[in-house]
Length: 299
Image (cartoon, rainbow, N blue to C red):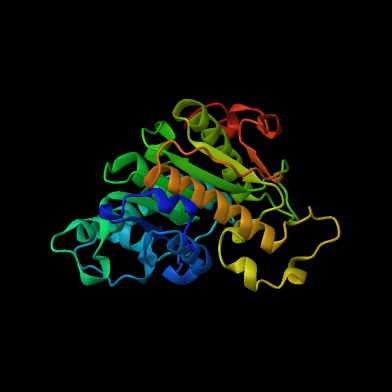
């Protein structure tokens, strides 16, 4: 069903575009439920596969090619130490692909599939690695009107220095401890807390909307929330996890409100309020202190 705000939009303007970028190794279909909701609200949706599924380019730098094809890993201290350079290199490659897609979408004459699209109104939505690419893109490409980052990092991207265009970033819960059900440090959690400090600075300096969803996990921002065997992850002492239908409602509502506000009806005030959703400024007191985590800097 189209979003009510579409009724007030000028029919001669064409429909705004939303480009979706998937997770590290992901496919364009990994978030079909969300993308169907976006399309049903009156947007044309273009979804990409991750760069790891692209054909090899003989002219590509060997180091770039190695990072493009490597699986994501944050298991060791070496992974953690190399993350800044790996992140910069891979998000750059993802951004390069996005720019090629934008070039094709903006070319004239438009393909029949995109007939009626308004290429002056484009937003990018990304999940996980795709969210990091969206953050980089909204900082560097003026063709994009807005960006949505679903539980992807911002640290070590150009967006960390501040943004001039609107960004909505939504994140899963972070636990204060660096050890989560493991005998070794959880390096993904360490990166998460460092990113939290970057996001806090970003929210203050750029006016970006940055939220955390209580009870959410990383996979809850994709279609995995409909297919996971929740008992497989059951632990008696683990924090309570948000119900899939509730998470679906939260993500769809906040993303659609944001896209309508910035691509269809500028100035529209968000109306939804969810008890599980808190801004980073509301939960600043939860951040572990100390310069090791980069809190209070934009990194």
